[in-house]
Image (cartoon, rainbow, N blue to C red; front, side, top):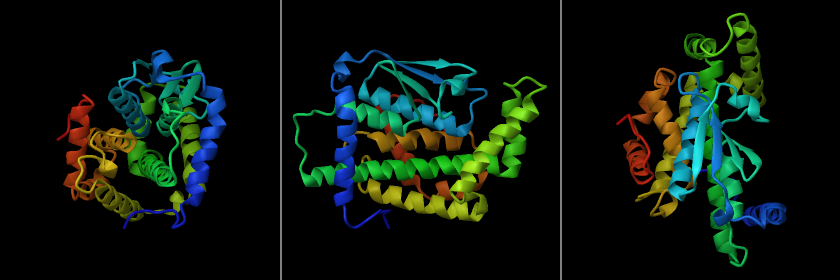
Length: 279
C-alpha cells in the first residue's frame, strides 16, 4: 500500500504555491543558462560515512542527468562548511545548499518557467512527488544513521574506526563521542532510539514495497521515461547499501527480495553514466 499523507490534496497545492512564492523573487533573476559551475564539497572516500556518501552520489547522479556543470572537491573538513553538517555542500551561484533534497528543490525553483500555469491536477501530482521524495529520503537517511551511530556493533567496529583515520589521536574519543551524541539525540527525537533491528527491517520492507508500486511497469518511478529526483536518490542509497555492505548486513535479506529495485538502479546508472560496482 502506497504511503499517502492525506486524502485531501488541497494543502499540497497550497504548500507548493507558497514555496514557489517564497523563493520566486529571490531567484527570479537566475536561470539554468546563467548558472555558474556548481561546486560540491564532500569528504574523501576513505573516511566518508554511508549517509554522506549516499547523498553525494545522489547529487552527482541528478546533476549528471540534468547536464549541469559541476566540480567535486573532497576535503577533510567538508562538514565544517555546512551549517547543518549535511553533505554534500553545494555552492550554487554564491549560495550554500546542503544535502540532496534541498538542492533538488532549489534547482526546481530556478528551472521553473513562471509563464507556465500548472492546473490543479498537475500541481497535485508534482506536490505528491515532492512528498514521496521527502518521505523516501528521510526513511533511507534514518536507516543509515541507525546502523552508523546507534547500532553498537557497527558503530564500534566500523564508524569509530573510520573516524580514527581522519582525527588526531588525542581528540578521537572526544570527537567521536560528541558526534555520536548528536546523532543519538536526533534519533531519539524521532523515536528511533526505541526501535529494534527488527523494527528497522519492517520499515525498510514497507519502503521497498512502496517503491515497487511507484515503479509499476517503469522504466522509472512515477511512470517517467527518464530518471528523476527520486530515481537518483535511490541510486545513491542502494549503491551505498552494496558497497558499504558491512554496515548493512541485516538489510540484505530485505533488499534481495526486490530485484525490480536493483534493476531500476542499473538503468539509472546506465542513463546517468554513473558507476555501478555491485550487481
